[in-house]
Image (cartoon, rainbow, N blue to C red; front, top):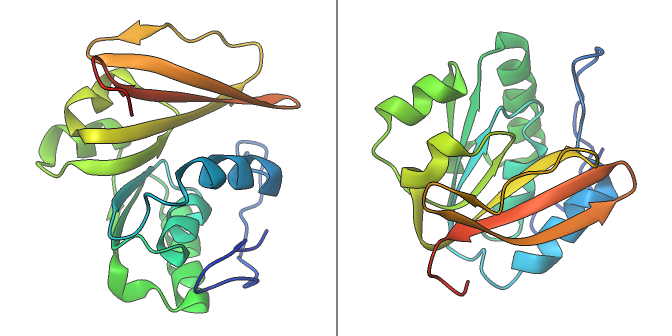
Length: 172
């Protein structure tokens, strides 16, 4: 696993071991970031259920201003810290060792881009014009609308799908 491009291009990231870990492949990551490459400069991103932090780190490497990494696992956050040190992006990051649902309840922060596996709790955390990328198994069919979020596009990468959601009524 590596940073694909930007400031930290080519840096190898530490990964997590275990059956519960499903790191985003380079192909999926490249697909996500090619769709937002011109919108990342100065953006704030949320890497919810961060794992190794590779999506937030990729966003920072490509010009995002701030990334919030949230994971309930101390082991995951230690891995994120190591990866931030490897890439030199610690000063643009905030880490939270807590359940993602709990983080969403307590934060007033709104984000330009959110990388997550859940949707309903994210409705009020997205800035106008922002995007949510929800990575999931290809067999899972997500709804066209969830609260004030609308499914904009589905990207397919082998066994993985990434569903892109925007605020209803926006053409982002």
